[in-house]
Image 1 (cartoon, rainbow, N blue to C red):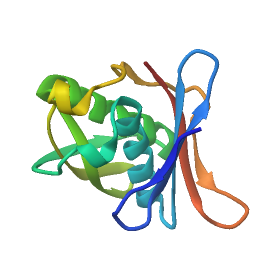
Image 2 (cartoon, rainbow, N blue to C red):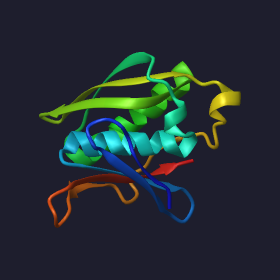
Image 3 (tube, rainbow, N blue to C red):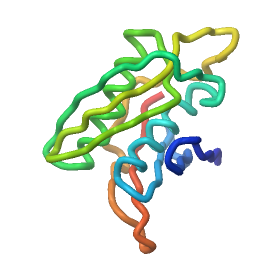
Image 4 (cartoon, rainbow, N blue to C red):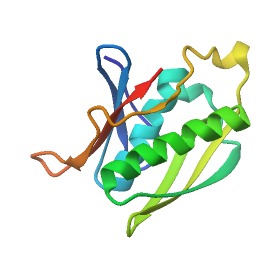
Length: 147
């Protein structure tokens, strides 16, 4: 299992095993930190996030009827931006309110030789989709991504 901690706001992330695909999980003191950690885990499925410079800001706006679906929408919005802009992201600042997520993601264009992308993420799924607090009160945001 791979794990890491990004340099922003103490959000943590990890991958978890799944039969055919890959699980991503973010942790944080707030739901926003957990969503940021899940986004970092998404990047880490493709490349080492430390190799991605946060040079260009991209604004993302999505909505869903509950926080679990909002996590899937958020990750799928990132996958869309990664694909259409041919970018990778390494810094995230999501803001969540009233079923809406507005975020800034910072990254740079993919450089195959430097980033050495391992997989192409096709999207976030509803498999093992969960957003909530653990027994200690820490937020967890997770789902399986299709790679």
